Length: 160
Image 1: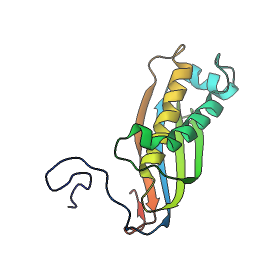
Image 2: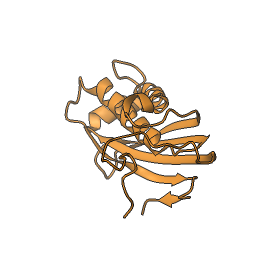
Image 3: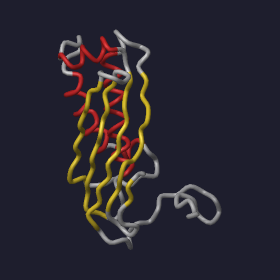
């Protein structure tokens, strides 16, 4: 098992020094979903929610969140992101009504973008909750996780 990198030899939290790491192309993909009532999903799908285009606004919120990750997570490095893409998939037939969100984040730098991808997904899903809570307070955000990451010394990793 690897050691936790955000603690020094005395056990105190610190920001990892990435100065000596080479800049490489790095990509991370994260996903998650928000479950809801069928009527709520229908509102989102039709674009008739009171607050407007739910998925359009959630997409922008996710992109914005990825760019602000280092402001939210204390030990994350601020990164110059080269790409943030946030996509949604709606599912109703044969499953719990839900919106799945996938975020893909890229950079060329000395550290990965998994936290940025996770943050994009969480904030996009929170935005959906915020915009639809007037009609469905029982929505549930679930299954947020990293699907894959590429680049850096550790290379590629894909969830099984």
